[in-house]
Length: 289
Image 1 (cartoon, rainbow, N blue to C red):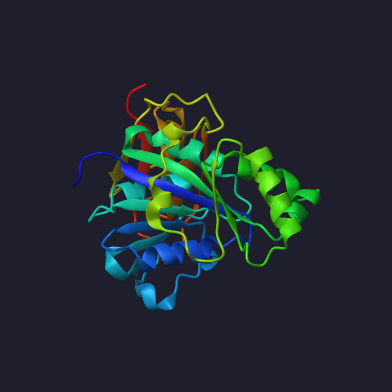
Image 2: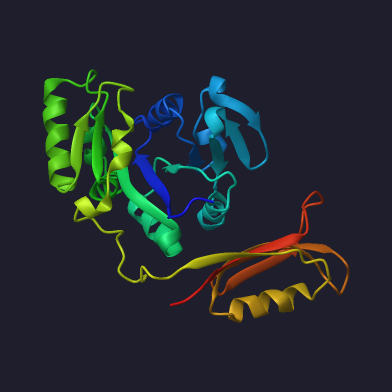
């Protein structure tokens, strides 16, 4: 396995800004780079069909040794899976959902400490509709918070915007992303140079100062071959201050039923598992403080 942290770029922006186009463009011109693409759900990122080689339950195998992973509501578990992939990816592209706040995503990823390095947040904004989005009381808060997290702000679809729309879009970016570099793009003409951004070049933060950067997370996989009291086992995990996340399936000793265990922090749930699941448990815990 290669030394050093996995490099990750967050690609964000409101619905319709062009994130899918950008990701497909980067995959099509990977030039030997082995990308791991993370999406909220596979349906939210229609990878070009000619780039897909095989589809599985959790991973889509793409051309050139790239993969696509769906993280759903469980970013931490998917990130651990990306970190442990063999062969190791060269770069992770995380495509955030259209309503996600990329600063919060970066804050969560920072829990992995030196294992994963966020190079930057690339924020795509549709120049034609950006001013309308900020005028919409239902959208403005999300859009402005997305812009505030940007290391690179990309104004897309500038060929469709009127001069007045372009002027307003540029002013919005200047007001709400003052520390971001800015690119204007007519279409899928962005190059891989956007991935070379470093957070050290900006004054942006992850939006939180509560998580020490020296926290390191480790992943432990337990086969759970023996039956246990599922509720008591989950309760003991929840009491362990080092455990931050656990997910898996185990046999309940009282009735022999296969149960699913989900734990986040001190909260957990135990419920009957689906018939097709495989027994075993993955635990993410801190290692050092």
